[in-house]
Amino acid sequence: MKKLIWVLLTALALLVMTACGTADTEDKTTGDDQQVETNQAEENAVDETETDEEAVEEDTATETEDVIVEEATYVGMADPHTIEVNTETDTISLQILDPGVQDVDFEAIEEEAHVTIEYHKEGEQNILTGIEIH
Image 1: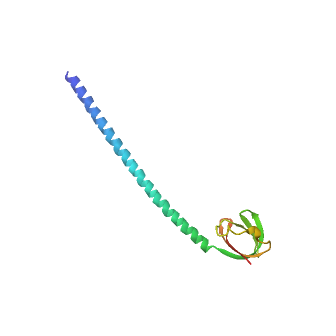
Image 2: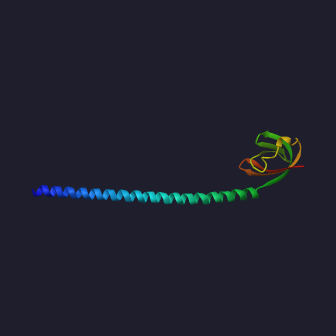
Image 3: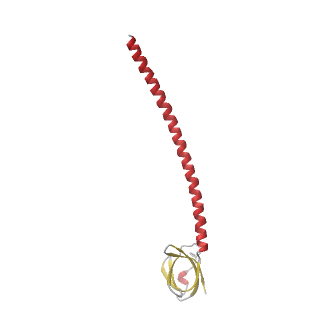
């Protein structure tokens, strides 16, 4: 009889310790993990915002510092978003991506018209930022 009581008490004690330990650990771990994930998400959002602001500042600085102004002769439209001009030394294709020049009616400009162009380079592309017809 003593053996049966000791076996039952030991089994009950193990059951109580196991149940209590698992429930507390899971609740605390889940809460901590969620808090850590939330904190990491907030930190990443702050880092992305700072990175985006820095990128905008760098783009603005790049565009204003690297603007090239040249006298040229208008050749015509190469496609709906590209024009070509002849400079003193070369023929240049210019992408019409800047909002400031998208309203210009390039098809109305006569071929061989004398123009002053403003553009900047992005990799291999020349991006037109301004044009004045003389």
